[in-house]
Length: 253
Image (cartoon, rainbow, N blue to C red; front, side, top):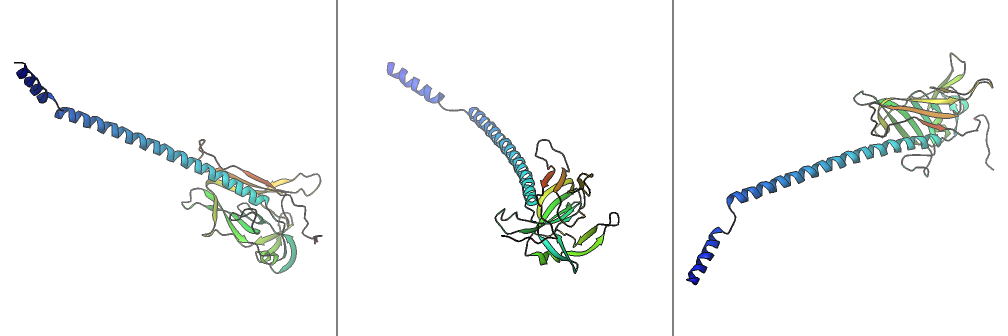
């Protein structure tokens, strides 16, 4: 009797052991929901990381471009050209306009402060979609005063002041032009011009009419779309510490 009871219990347990189909479906459903939640969380995390990284790279680009621009302007070299448009004339080489600038600098994008002097051509051009403007720079190896003289095509007096003004070849952007700043509402250059007399203070002008170098250079920029969450292009002002006179010949001792 005891043996039969034991066999009956074992048979009952074997019939009730295992997992039903409903339990399997519930487990699969819960596992699917958990997997979907993990995928969504990972996707959201990757999107946030991508946005943060993009914003950080944009901020670094803006800060780097402003630092490069400031170093290029502060590295201005007081080189002397010997003629202009076939006319023998010694003048300090510098072209300054509202949206175009030429100067020789000891700083370059490729070699920093350690390379050879470069002729820098800063130019403001329209965006490809004509929505805003961008600031680009051309770097050309400086080969001497005779080469600079070829860039000056003529000289004529200013109709308002009577001061002799130099005329240069136009600046053009090319495939090798480096974009310093883009998506700008505006970008304009101005030059700190010495006073004509002791009673007049120096003034900022959007053109450079003199044969020499200004006391300072300012590049004003504003973003096309203001975004307080990112670093915005700002005005860059660089002093020019030059006391050389173009008419005098200097000898190194």
